[in-house]
Length: 186
Image 1 (spheres, one colour):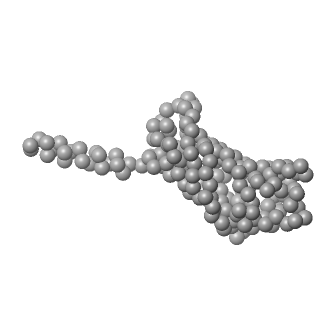
Image 2 (tube, one colour):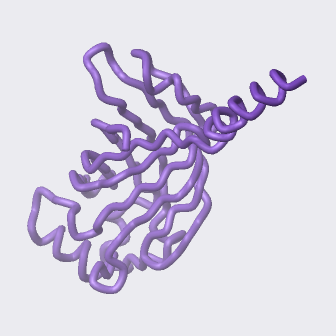
Image 3 (cartoon, one colour):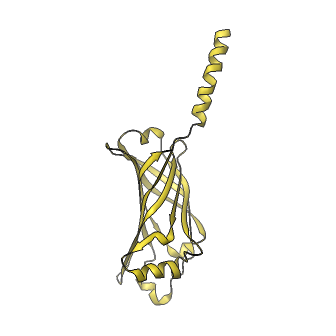
């Protein structure tokens, strides 16, 4: 009995540590691209300064992107985007907080690409809405963890007003592509 109690005493910290262990990964190397495509005009922008944190144990994920970091082909488009539509001085960031269902810590330690379901809340332009999509996470043989997903958003869902005069130039649904790379263990 004495040996059992001693073994239990030695094992308890190990079990407790596993139960509370978190496998967190972070990166500052994320890209978000959006495309608004209409018969009149195609508008594309990319943000190369997206940051993200993943907890592989719980599947929790948080991402943040500065609105002013979106780059457009035409400077005037970027100016209108920031001043007239996104009001980036008032609403400087887009933030996603959610969970990747199906994520397991071992997926981030061995080469392979794994499908996950991504659900959470996207806050943009002062409005928070639930979003869900399918995504992938994993790594190639050479290294760092990567994650990707695509989704479609409607500017009107986030209180982004499009003047009638340019309504035909901006799509009602904007395609968003998220590519996050080079996650490193924290």
